[in-house]
Image (cartoon, rainbow, N blue to C red; front, side):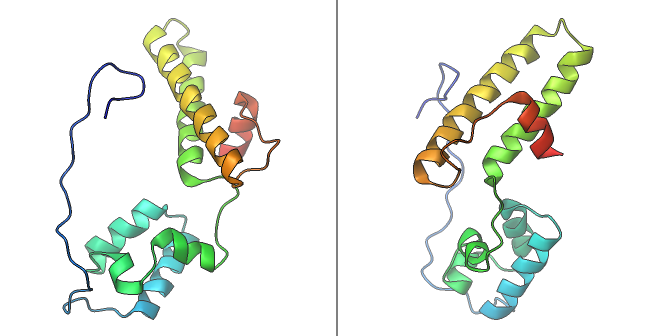
Length: 151
C-alpha cells in the first residue's frame, strides 16, 4: 500500500508467529495482567507503551491471548478512556511542537510543509472519529485548541 503523502510504497514489518493460545511459560494470570494495565495507564503510559512494557518487563508476549481482550478493550471496560483518542492526541502534540519550532525559525520551509501534512492527517483522523461517534459532532481542530488540549 502506498504512503499518504509520498509517491512511494512502504516496507512490510515482521509478522508475528501464529499462536492460538497463551504460552505455558507466561508467569501472570489474566487478573494480574489487568491490574498491571490499569496501574501503567494511571502512570500515563500509552496503549502501545503498556503492551511493550508487558512484553519486556513482565514476559507477557500477547495481552489478547493472555486475557481474551486487547489493552484498549480492557481500558474501555474499566472506563479509563481519554476524551481524545491516543493517536489523534499524539499527532496534535507533534503539531504543537512544530508550531513552536516555526515561531523561532520562520524560514524553515520543510518543517512548514511537515506541519501542513500533520494537520491534514489530524483533520482526516478527526473526521473518522466524528463519524464513528468517538468525538463529538461539533469537535473541530484548531491550532489554539491543540495547544490547550495537549498541555
